[in-house]
Image (cartoon, rainbow, N blue to C red):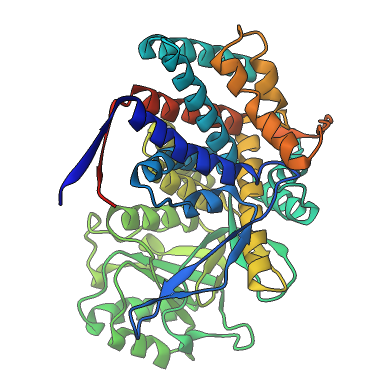
Length: 495
């Protein structure tokens, strides 16, 4: 298909126009006076192959609005995509800051292109912006203070003043701790709550319902159990019989974590012997190297040895004392497994945690960092689950978006400290700069927040923003503005 070419100022203007439309829609969600945006949703009917309308989503979440914007003009839509990249990078780094990044990115690009139109050299404009960026970042870092238990205040700002959401987020973040993780899941009722879990928890559950010990809750409860961690399944039932006989003689239930799916004959044998010893079969929810790492992580908590390909221990020679781990309590539900009271030594667990922390500190890949963070949270045994409720699906979805923002902001504040909220930190950090692009752009989030509220918003001592969110928003916004500033041509397909 032939493509169209657009060069020079017209290309930049149309990219900037798309960024402006994006910023105007996302910007209305900023601050306690942020407004709701209703988004049309469609899905493909599998029977007809046609798109059908679903229930619209109502949200004040900048991420959701940002991801929903798509323009008919292909060049403008490329401007939207560029700005979306910056916002998504901020969310990946600190869990919040989409709206601030979007508003800042458009402001910086608009002001910088205005200087170029007045005759300034793009390279000179970019050089000044980078110098002033470093000065603003240094001043922000100098303003920062430790969070000191103020998770609620940070979550309240991030959730646009929703006190219930702020309470849920602050309780969950406080329960999880600095290295912990917070899971956000829908509630089966209109009520929302926080469930704190002490121990190792992961998203994989019972392979067969026949192993349920509590039909009322639909879970298998094993106390004082042995833990078998194996990457591969046995070649036959005969290969596993000696080990099962040793488990029976030990008089303990068995949790079997397997990288491969279980053979029907193995499941049949374990179910048939439920009266001899209780057991629960769980397939590990990962593949490849991550599966090996997961099994080794579990072994560092419960003791024993993860039977990976590198171990090469024949099934007939697996010993209870040498190879199996131990746990005081195991609860296996349909989709989750929770292990408490692992039998490993504190020194072994600490060594594993330090190894994961070192890998996290040296990693620059966003996905890899996410995986390492999840592993660290699991090893540290700090898990908090927020069950988000609502009277209607639309209310539940809107509240879930707000909870995600509040949790992301609170966790970022735990890691990096806090600065003045309401856009004041960025505004004050830019006051020492000479009049120009950076100083003007740093005041835009504050102006947008007040515009949404319909009045000048007072900022008290309890109005706080995470330092990491403010820094990341500025850095990523300037990064994408520089891309637009350097653009000389656009290649696109005819609409």
